[in-house]
View 1: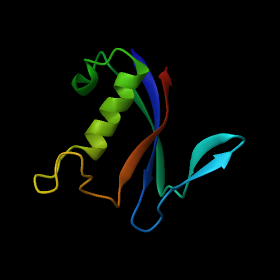
View 2: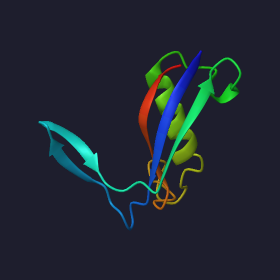
View 3: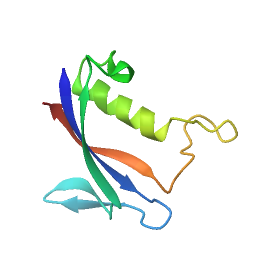
Length: 94
């Protein structure tokens, strides 16, 4: 199945996003220095072959971009490159 994924890249060291309330909902406010759209095909992309839901695809994207090289010094949950923190803005079946 194909999924359309929109990602944004933040530099959390110089442009930290803030959690604000907008129309009664908590949203992230900040300046992304890169946004991109990618089509992921779970039938042809072996990194996403295990994905069955939108959430699986989102987790796969975040894992690939943010946890590609986990820190052995600071633990597996540390982002090695805070200058390029990737977030999934939208993910839906294509």
